[in-house]
Length: 287
Image (cartoon, rainbow, N blue to C red; front, side, top):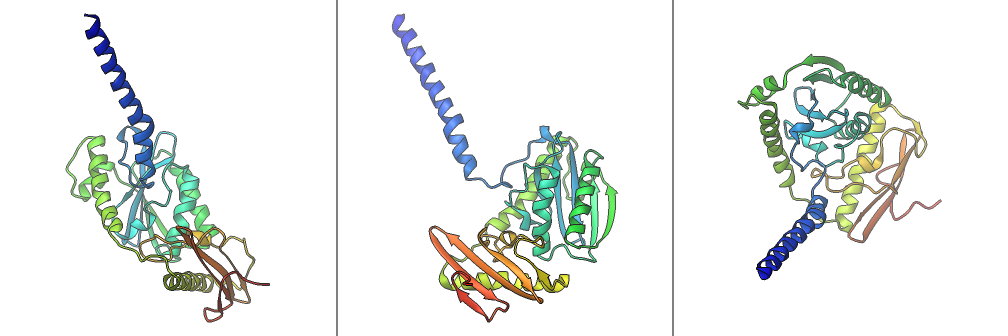
């Protein structure tokens, strides 16, 4: 009888250790491999959804919890996946929009003259959202025609071909729908970082800066002044490579001067531009 008790206690101890290992080691390690947009939606946290549709071409939604934080994103088309795994989720409305809007601008998905539809399920935290949205458009000198709408979660799901009635089922199926676009984005292959590709990526960043400066009519801008954070500009279509935070740019007499750096797996490539894409030097900008 005593032996059975000992065996039982040993079995319970082993199970407890396995459970503890799973909770404190396996699950945290797994989460580290997941990007900010890879998790499945927690329907119990749902409070509201605010959809953003730009020119009927780019369509995505911010999903809010009871605290008013953006805890999930839905992608309703391929172009919206530019926001995929950009650490937009699990932040306040202000912080999430502050990350999302520059990415949209840099990828030419949000420009002056665009037709914008802001579509909310409910009124919860919507005023905070629209206030922040308008402040960011003003900050980046984006003038749009904005139409505000109300559409229930169920009506939105029906427009996507989802035939469910409960909120939890709608959200889960909407997430499956969204992740089909994520899967397409993840399946894109990207080039490895070499001297040749880094030079090409650097030129891409520089030309995007020139286009941005030209479109805004900027003739003078000191390093560090707010126009766009250079480290948020993707260097290629898969959004795998971005300039490091050491990178910078300024504008003098309408010309862009920039230091653009890339790093990966211990490899570092950097270039200095002195007012033209043709005036490029490898390495840091000397005085």
